[in-house]
Length: 368
Image (cartoon, rainbow, N blue to C red; front, side, top):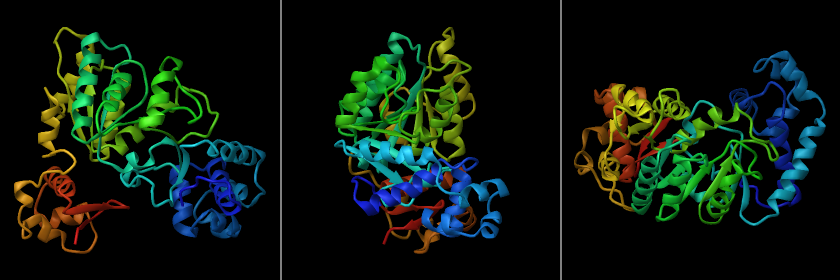
């Protein structure tokens, strides 16, 4: 259920999720295991110690059976107050509006704190990331690519940092696809402060999202971790200017691990800000010189995605292999005889054409 009000039942539901989020020793993976075994938070906290011990270590099981800690109670009051503000929402892992692509990653957050247009989190998007200390040309490229891709109907996803991120958001706001900012602080804070005006415009016309509890300030470890959400929300990641040791390369690596496409913009062989992009291209990232390169890779034709030639007929081999029951990628690769790379590319084309859909748990199904 999307939590957007302060009714007693919604407050009680939110309290359970916040308590689970703040349990010591329980991260997204352990929390998901508990949810899979026992159900929603009330069932987890009602479970006996012996049953809990089969899923989590003894220390965590003891914490679960103890009364709620003051931290969870204080976060509940803060969050309920924050939810009174127009445009604010909290999505739980069990929410029907939870972004479906995030359900495919190994450790989706229990809670997402959202400011703005929640629906953008589930729309087709491309992440654009790069250096904070970008060149003037790099920032112009980020804005231009983002505007063109947003005008084609793709949501632009980035991290609200200075440099490439900020200009990608600016470009995204100029197109129909708008933009999503994934931040590394609580959703009630803006970091860096120089992007305060930009953040306010994103909250009004796009979407700001965070997995971190309200009030949590910027901490070094938050930003590499939030990168998995930038790539996880997107169908592909475009890197524009990145040094050889860059946080953008972390996002690109995570994108590859998550089965997303990785694109890179080449630069001068003499520029240190091109080293990371060149390394990605050497490793198999798709070289792009214009936004059309991304659109053509996905056979995207605006709000109505194009139907690739291989998906033109209902009897296409991959559609036949899909059948009408959910199937995982490994089984589908075995059925179709395609390599995993070929398979994921064709599945994306079918998905964009509205002929197949991704389901939670990494499953795929033919659309009836």
